[in-house]
Amino acid sequence: MRKLAEEGAYFFPSTLVLKCVDPEFHLAEDAGEFATMMGHRRVELYAGLDLAKLRGQSVGTPYSAVIAEVADVVRSLGVVALAVDRSGPGEVVFEQLAAELGAGMVLGFRFTAESKAELLSGLKVLMERGQLRLPYHRPLLAQLTTITCEMRPSGHVLFGHPPRGHDDMVMALALACWAARRPRGAGVRLA
Image (cartoon, rainbow, N blue to C red; front, side, top):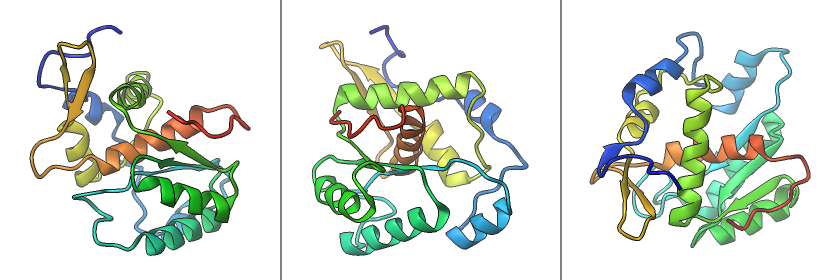
């Protein structure tokens, strides 16, 4: 693997992130607003779910509530595929979503140092090629621009974020992009 960045460098430079921001692209706050924004346009939708374990959007929310809300949104929007963090407690959520939505539509992704590097590198390539549009959403943009990477002596790349920082939105976005790049019928990934 080529060296991704110098020690402690930001993986997604702010210039790259800002290049992807489309001022005409707005973030919907819920499924109803999204359906209204889309009107009668037909698009393939892919979704990613990164479960926060210690800090983040879903901490403190019972997994049963997360599963019910995700399943409802996936169904109401007609999502083609949902990529789910299958690491640790995510395994139970993955299994329940696969049972509820169908195993073919729910893709599992296990985070390791290598798979996280693959996932974030794939996201960065899409951004560099101009194939990803982002809304001006401060929390997402802040997370993107604070992801750091460090080459370890072992040759592995370690990704991180500042103390009290988050990466759950970035990882969910990267998971959705990963799902969109997968061939149809590719099955479950045990990364």
